[in-house]
Length: 87
Image (tube, rainbow, N blue to C red; front, side, top):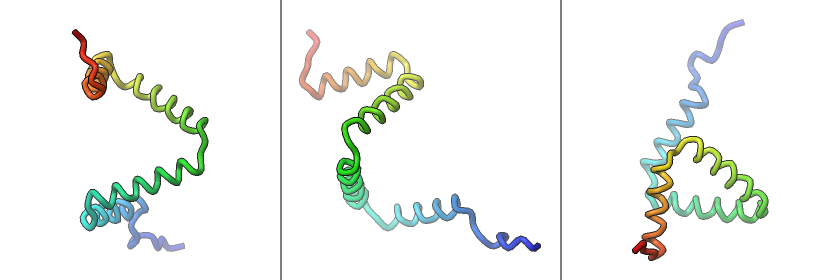
């Protein structure tokens, strides 16, 4: 049986090409709009427990990959944004 896939690109390559074309043809506002729509759809389809689970998973991964300095930096940034000053 002959292999007829020699002239076809892989899904990975097709996805990369499509993504590159999309990024050339659309601006920041396009990505903000689709992100907003996706977030709204996700919120409609999932409950509080879903967000708790993904938050926990994300927190576990972050704690595995980040050190004490990372948490110090983001704590300082959060404090500055909220107006908290350490005197």
